[in-house]
Length: 282
Ligand SMILES: NC(=O)c1ccc[n+]([C@@H]2O[C@H](COP(=O)([O-])OP(=O)(O)OC[C@H]3O[C@@H](n4cnc5c(N)ncnc54)[C@H](OP(=O)(O)O)[C@@H]3O)[C@@H](O)[C@H]2O)c1
Image (cartoon, rainbow, N blue to C red):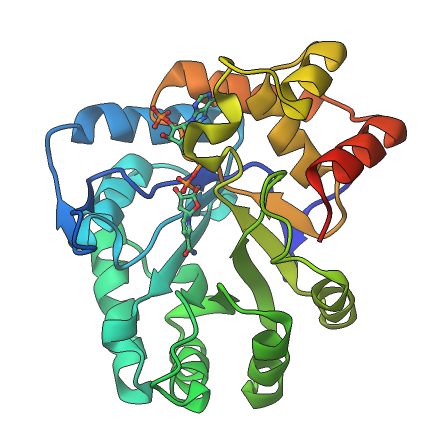
């Protein structure tokens, strides 16, 4: 069984995504908090953790800050050492002097002393990269986080970030799935291997697009032949690659169970090649 890790920390390859818990996004793009489903979402996170999914992914942005509170409640009283908690700093706090303030506020909401992995949520053209990469380094030096990472970075941006950073950049969280492969091209793979950067694949089941069974697709066909569901195939496709972990979001035990069972799915090389050829590789 392939070992999965971020930095020096071994962790479960299937983590827990939390976008959409505790809030969502209006049509105009602004995010909002929503407290109605807190109990169900907290239970879903606890359920996944009980199965062993110890990597929890959240962000300052999600639910306009409420999602971190949901995670804080879900993990309260659990064994801290067994968990790997990652959060992200949003653009609003990407100036060097502001990153540590965001991290401190995240810690308060998460009810933690230290974050395991603090990302910058995305690269922002209007802000020099040295600002937010410097801010991440300051947060680590201040003991607010154990590791730092980036998200939505291209290979060129990742290379620049590595050059600017005093501490290792241990992860790049990107949109990467069976249906979306260009984020992890050959250059990205080589860079990640050279600098020990883990790819954290987000949107693994494409917010249900992969699980729609109404029309025949190569994914459905391959899943049927392997005796698994499309979501399981999509997750197994990711975690079967060296240096890749993923963070599906599931807010029901049924979805959590289904996704977790992807651990038992092995994709034969010829099926992988066929999927690559039919869907198109990076
Ligand atoms: N860094 C970034 O910019 C960024 C961007 C997007 C996402 N993320 C992170 O990545 C995580 C995952 O991405 P995502 O939430 O966008 O997409 P996703 O995990 O691919 O899809 C989540 C959606 O799929 C449903 N689902 C999950 N398992 C399923 C299954 N087995 N069968 C059918 N439907 C299933 C969920 O429904 P239920 O909720 O009803 O279970 C939810 O609606 C996020 O939650 C977030 O933590 C990061």
